[in-house]
Length: 238
Ligand code: DC
Image (cartoon, rainbow, N blue to C red; front, side, top):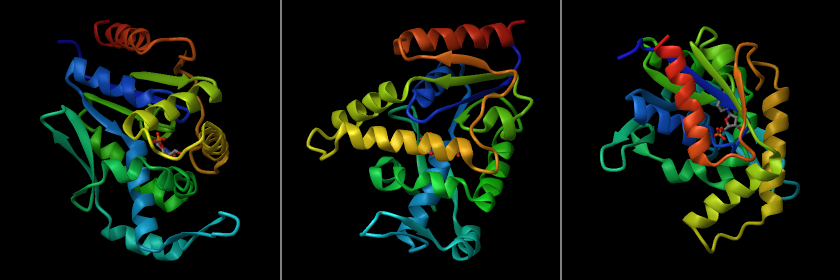
């Protein structure tokens, strides 16, 4: 076996980062951490505990930052491993919330929550702790720049907003064919999130200087997985 490394996979929303990160982790026996799920869990908590409200009139979001910051001490965000599906399950205060965190309600509010410095500081520390022993594949927006700036392999994944919106739409429809969603709403959400994620003050989404860029707009999942595995081998077998 080659040396144990940290693999940091960053990029835009809905560009297949988690699919490839999860696959690589399974192939090489590494731990996989979806940091987006961690921000989504905090968002779900804020929504269900009244720290985040949306105006019915104009959809604007109000966050009780002081209240959320105080409450965060009691929020436990973690993962369990489902032996049957071989996939991680997101746990918010011990409860599986995989389905709840992937819905539109959370998707539409997660970027403002992820822009809060006290949320980022807390989750970044937890992520760094998770990767202390290496042997980990982590995906997110700031893994190669802020969480593990010394990661041995950094990949920056992207694809056009339209391709990403279509993939997200297909994914949601495959799970729930009667879901009342429009492709145009998904595209708007993808573009909005890109903007907020790239323009926030603390640790915005940006490409690390030493990251390998992967634009997978015209790639199949198999092609991108193979690309990643080859990169991984080149860094661990060198
Ligand atoms: O990867 P995702 O779509 O599940 O991420 C959800 C949101 O969380 C996304 O809008 C940006 C934010 N995020 C972040 O700011 N930093 C990370 N490391 C991971 C996600």
